[in-house]
Image (cartoon, rainbow, N blue to C red; front, top):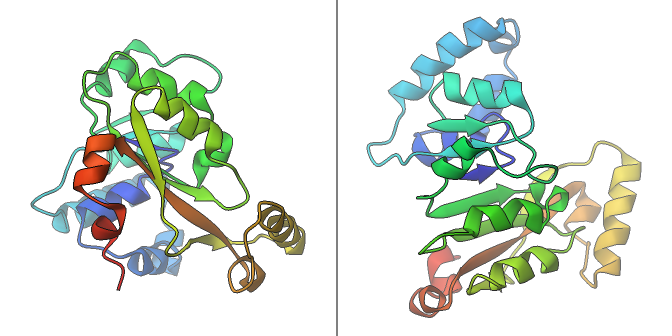
Length: 223
């Protein structure tokens, strides 16, 4: 399950023989920019079908942006998609049913908009809780969400080996805010936020037995 999935880019990268650089080039090209939404959906459906990995897994998307979720479903990136705001209301019965067998929950950059109100319903009533992999902006704290997950018997580990670039700042004010927030949190923005991008930290949450059997550093395989 991809929380804050937008158009399904995580699903595109996970399940298809494409790179993020290729997608940047594709969607900033004049040819694609000139297409209508209907034309792009038709072209992208064939584009991703031709690059589908044989070991592709179903991806459920969740986002408050209904048009983005609809696109992800229409082109085949999302096997199911829900335009719901779980911060404001409980999940619909359809969303609740669809997530019962989810084995991995991801969120890449959107954790700063979320709280336990989103995560708790996804874990309630589960015999085996899913893993949660969250890339959290360094301007935000993940403590409250990690505490919520801990109540379900899950342990959260932080990747201290590196940070992960998220996106460029929109203007100098956003950059100054990020530098100040990162510094206030006790981290060093030099070479990261000072160079013009938000950076995230990876938090991986799992049952304690899984964390012991599969150490975080071994999963990441950093050179």
